[in-house]
Amino acid sequence: MELALRSGNVTFCAQVTLHDLARNQSHDDLVLFGANTVLGKFNQFLEDRQSHGYAVFDKIPVEHPYRYLREKFQVGLTFPDGHSRRLDRVVGTAHAVDGTSHLCSIADVMLGAFRYCVNEPDNEEAGKAMFPTLMRMMWKQPNALTHGLVFRPRNISEAKHQAVYDALWARLKGYLDA
Image: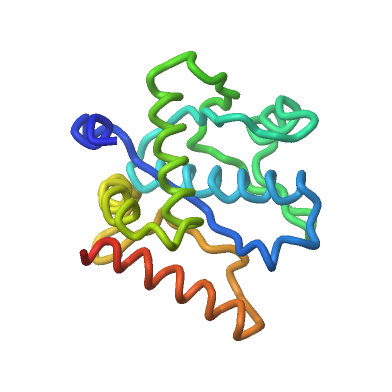
């Protein structure tokens, strides 16, 4: 991760969904919803930079990952109400294979570190060691801690679920303050 940080060319975005809120969704719906969220953020990132880019996904563990990638490239994001939004800054999509490039390895390490920081609250030392590096590569806008870390769903109706997200956010910010 330090090498990625020093390159100055790696930007990280991630999406978090509370397991209790996701348990009534199918595996494929959860995976594809998360992929859509990250793709939408990537398109926003590219727009913010007035640039274009190629989206390379790590393994997409659904039955037809290439069908998904083709739809995102050709149609864009589709919403339950029937409208869609083109990913006008994304010039292509691809599905990575482990061990096929340094970029895929970097993405695998960064995502694994992020998952560990989120899902292992009892190992604060590891979180304090890894999370600040991740956050330095997280997409940010001026005067914002992050723009690339997305908590879903956007609106939480139950206080107990909001409390879990608030505690996670506080713990992650604590890793930065350490």
